[in-house]
Image 1 (spheres, rainbow, N blue to C red):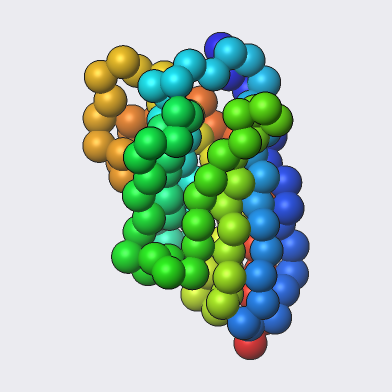
Image 2: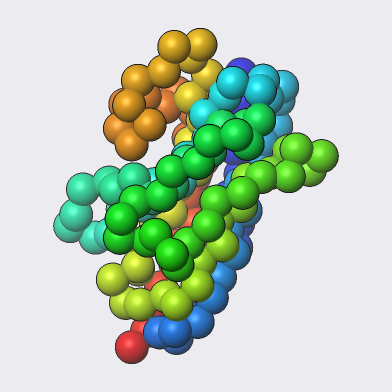
Length: 126
């Protein structure tokens, strides 16, 4: 079992930066897939980025490519989401999720992920 705790959200002005953290409690195998999703009020949950725990594969949604970067620190058992050039459309609750399956589903589909954190609010003011 994996427990996830997100942190780092907050209020920031447009153009600013934030770094979100997702700390995992429990054994993290190299093939685990860790992702960030977000959900804005009245909208569906949206894939943001993912990485294999071993770090050899990452993906970023087109809407954040070039602005957001996902990376992990295996020593700290933590996955980060560095968010730069934020705009009001990035306002959402951000969730960290882990897929522990040996054969995974689509990396950008929330149904692939078994464990979820509680979420952290990111608000970008114009």
